[in-house]
Length: 402
Image 1 (cartoon, rainbow, N blue to C red):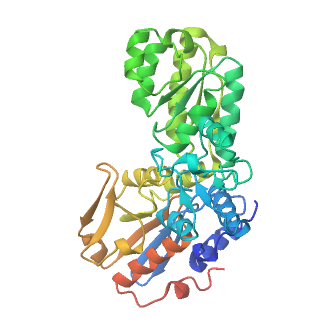
Image 2: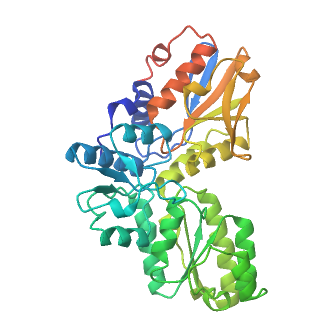
Image 3: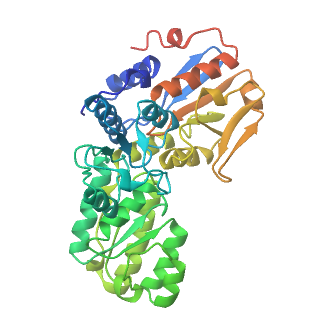
């Protein structure tokens, strides 16, 4: 695996050591049991996989290198580099400006851009239309493109399927930057429609079976299908791909469900296997999260950006088995009486009284999304240990483990 030059302040000696222990004991990454260690009366459960993935480290390396290579030039980002507030704040501190926000609203007048400006494509990628518009202004994105290679893999597979007459069904969040980009690239070669979940897949199945009209499709899937899409014509041959940060198991469930419907209507040749487009890092992190569900932990702490889709998925998995505190960083642990957590149902930050943290003996899962620096997770662990009044250091608790 390639080693990336990531700023040292994103690294953690403690978590780096834990990862090294796991690398030695499980070099082929086949064991999803968590790493467990005791600090005083607090037992910490660390999943096999968490934190920065290949695509995120690649994006961060390119972004900071871009700053170093272009002193005095204006440098822009096409939206958030990744969905982590500290990383984006660090880039702003380096002088990088954002061209658009997460919803695509323009923050800078594009007419002021010139060929002298540097524009970085974020890890989510960007649309074909945006690339073309910037090229007309003399701004070319090829040199400072941080699009995740696994996102680009989905695009290439989508293009190949489109040229073979397949309609692409994208499992994703319609307004997410990556889904918008995948939709745009896929629409170059064929029809595309987006489904958010199993419920929307079941609705789409009614159109595959021709139980509902083309006119009703335009209402039910408004703004979620490519121009010229005709349900009665374009749902006879499909392939399913996903926004890489969605639940992989959900994508596979949707793909299998729609395959059965299409095969029933049009035969085996009407669908194709796209499991090879699922992101390995997303799979690893989600499988490792599933691997802690039977650990006996009483609480899970998930660290990351509140708009991070992959982090939300991790919190969702853990929430099936235990209470989850979804926090941005250690500052959210204000005291033993007050913690600020993100409620993924209401999409709001809430103040809670963490009675569970005051238990004498406590087993806690601590993990993070793919866009969260290990150092932030490190600080969260240290803060929990501090609040619980443990006198033993984490370093001493790890003595003799490698």
